[in-house]
Length: 211
Image 1 (cartoon, rainbow, N blue to C red):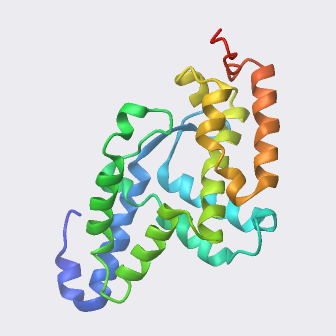
Image 2: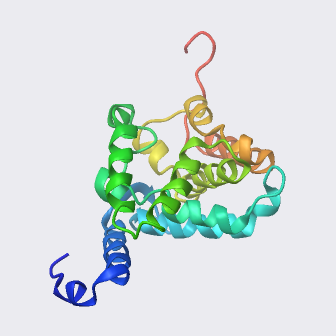
Image 3: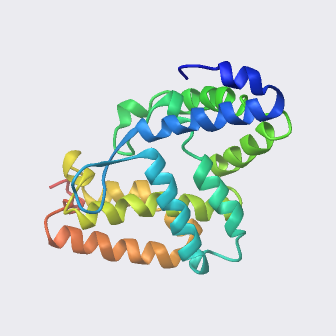
């Protein structure tokens, strides 16, 4: 932040809230691997988070059991804030994933620590719940998070599947948690995979013999 004079003059709780909100703006500068739907450029993480919030609002009827849509939306708006400090880790990049959890935990300490004491821990708890993926709300949020890149890859004709020379078997292994939050959405994803393979945008899974 270039100047904090105005924050110093504001002071107190409101200043802490403004600091957090202005820091969150940096999420717009974190570039992801996925292209936006028209294929013209890669999306940033703030756009990804907004899109996922819409996914939750529109698709909640397909969740396993009842979910609190507002709570799911909160998770999806908060889940990638840590990328401000930790950067984006592509799902397909195993090397980049080494140490990811530790980097993101440290980033969460920093970012949620900017907020007032009654807000920071509460938002951190929502972030932790998403990461653990043990509640119906978190499992559905994770399903949305995994589904969105699949749809974007398909609509642009390959996307990160092509970038990382990915095959259907590996893709399924990394995204099958969608079924934990919504079997309906997982069935839709499987349809997308089959069409992507048929079009040559996603490599077919290797056979048992490894050919």
